[in-house]
Image (tube, rainbow over all chains, first blue to last red; front, side):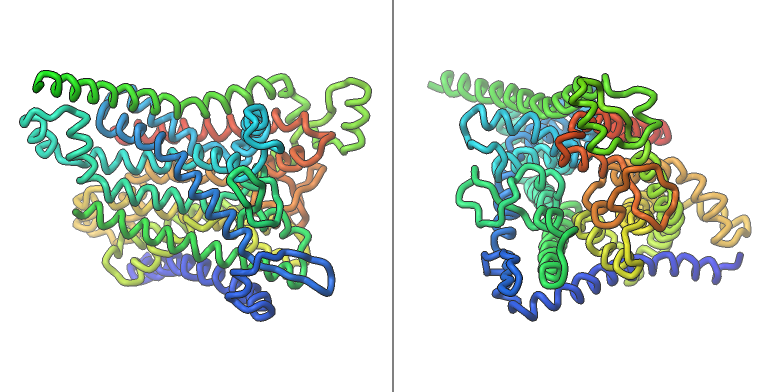
Length: 285
Length: 288
């Protein structure tokens, strides 16, 4: 095989990527078009009505955008107190020891569990617990979904943060120790300022994960098409409304669901792009 | 006074260590809880017939529950469907992904490579439910029906970025001297790639493929709108087909079949965890 043919084959294989991504965007945009045309782009995003009575169909994405943002934000709040200690445990306190690699394996395995099994666990274990604690009467809702989402994103945030914490130069830390700093002070005054932007970017990527998580949220959020009033009320996320209704939808509802898919795609793409850019910058500095 | 202050600082230091250990240990709780629950509720359902018989109809299951018998049937239709779709997806995604990864490793500075690299990240971060609806528009609508082909296209799109990334990263950390030695012996680039670089990178790529499979095998959302599901064993690739995660979803929604959830989940969970551990073990072994 000569070099030219070899290069051509590699190039063709690489062309698959732009074709697939272009196809994804093209399919979403063309099919979302009629919903945007019918309701208007801004009105579609800000309307909170979702009714499919024939003749008076009204579709708006606001309840689902709110649902997605609420579950993601809450999941992030629950995720930080666990992923940060894990990152410190693996990357600083017990760096390179056997315990750290065991904990690393545990978080890797957590990341590998299929989302439908997380959903089952949330439904059969966490939901009764939340009902028993009297937090909400029906058990499912934004809060239940967020707790399980948080467990799902801890591994991503923790392993990436640990990587940045590990990279903090030893001489910086040693300098602080030689001045008499305790380990807690070194972490607060040296490790966080140095690794901070990297840790932050790992949370941005974790948010990107949480935004699009489908099955877990569908099984736990309660599936009502209203704007959730509080964290214990039920709702729907952008991914879960698609999962719930796409199979039976046609015409305008079909197009509206694709439009929600397009919005979700854009949001995750932007969040992921910001996260990747921040990581690249944190790695260079 | 200074003595007190030192004491306080030392106490904070200790408290922080304990907090870190406590919260880090707490993260292991969900893994154990999930494993424990699925194991305890699912182990007695696993039997030979669970793997060789298709899903019972809701009616049969209801009769069995009324008579107090265990629910007949199993998840054979799901296992076969998963194998067919995963196999078709992997046969296309692995070679394409390796070639694309090789392109990225060979031309790291080119503008086009940077675009492809960026798009790979984009596709990897795309929620799986969106891959599902896009595949529906691409394949299910023109073919006028759900099919195993559509399901495998969705899985292919999900696997592709993972294979590309692992190939690219493994090829990039190979010593350049390896490639240069091959070229110095007079081989052309294709020969060096096929006979030197790819064999040397085999470990990393293989682990990447294992991880890609373990990632997509539990995917439910993209299959709901593409493969749909099917209650008997089927080998046709142009008809709706079932998959293990789809069956779990069906059982979850059908009160008569709810008892089958745990056996199916146990099977899926064990399969995914074993794949993950194998990949981790192989990565460690090949890195030495």
